[in-house]
Length: 295
Image 1 (cartoon, rainbow, N blue to C red):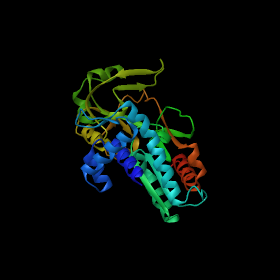
Image 2: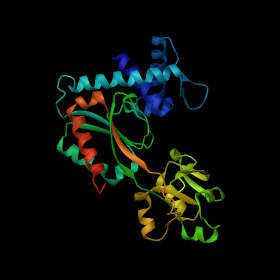
Image 3: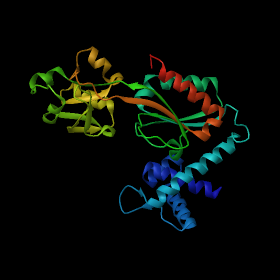
Image 4: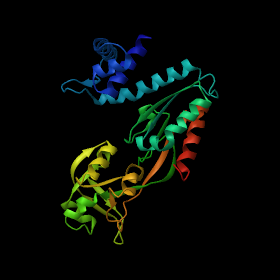
């Protein structure tokens, strides 16, 4: 049990970035978390964290051990819930990662219905747009626009994810004419943090990539939409985020003749987790929902 407590302290510290946040998550004190991590490092005769900065960062060794620590904790969780002995039982934990916009757009309601149908299932839902290997990150199901393919992971590509580039009419009225994507270098742009500064477009001449000038970078899509409505610059966001503003005329599409390069939604699950009925059932329901026209 001591080893499990140490492993959990290590994993949660890695996820939160500091001992205090890990302590709050695990309902204990920072000194206890620090002691458990120190003991685990002593057990393995190595160092997991670089403690020279305010936010703890994993060493290369720590990053490697983190993947195995997640797998050990997951195996213990499955064993404790009876999933190993009864893989067909619809009970036990399911850990899911999905973009917040898709959770708000209907996945959240699907999770609620799934829990009502299977009350012995515990759902942990992490809202994130960041890509990654769900097997290494400890997720049973991951939804996103990750372009990478991973071994031992089953994926299903669902559909294009609608995005639109737009700006406030007041901004467009006072700025220089915007006739081509390359003109964006002369405009303040509002950028979703994971999207970066390279904006890609389709055109008759082929794919065009523009290194824009972001004046605001954040992972809060609602704040980006509000900043665009205030006339702070040009933004590209998921259509559901800006749909109301477009309908109200607070934002208008820009450069519609140069559509944004499509990003595709896909759903992933580690191959080994598909053996669990609870995971397979939810995976199928999520894939069906994301494929439907109203999702």
